[in-house]
Length: 114
Length: 108
Image 1 (cartoon, one colour):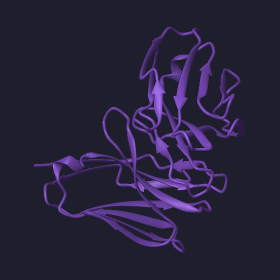
Image 2 (cartoon, each protein chain N blue to C red; image 1 turned 60 degrees about the horizontal axis):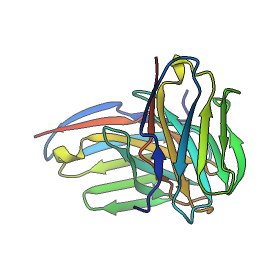
Image 3 (tube, each protein chain N blue to C red; image 1 turned 180 degrees about the vertical axis):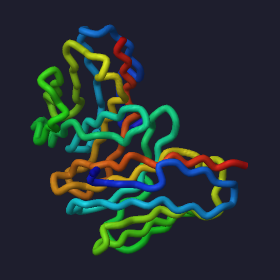
């Protein structure tokens, strides 16, 4: 399977715990995006990488959130001291570096904070 | 006001009906996308448009750049078309700005 993969697919955690999600993009894609989607809403942009450089971060990304893409391949999104409001689907997408490149989405990681 | 607005939010149709979903945007864009999301979360890109009209099977997407408006049409709708349809625009940095989605249910 050469699509975008995300791990885990589901995560249940208690408030205050830290969680980390992983995204493996399509191998030749330079750009990697993280989005968050709450129930009944469209996705919202969190951050994106061009290779290993994090080029843009949303105001939604509080200091409890950190994302990395250390070798320009896979990326991790960590949420520290989770809150119930962090419960959402976290989506990863990748594309070629062309601005108009189609973004290919992973299946998402559904987070539930109890 | 959201930068990307879709209407309607919910739509129920009978099998065979012609369906239209509308999208308006208020920001400068380099492209507009129509995406399909099935229960469980997976998102699939249907169309990317920067002008004019595109057709793929029973799906047609149009965009009017001057009016900042796009429509997605589904001809001869089928229950398997039931999904959430999301309009998104590509900003000048490449990130997508999404509408809130239109939930479509096609009844047999």
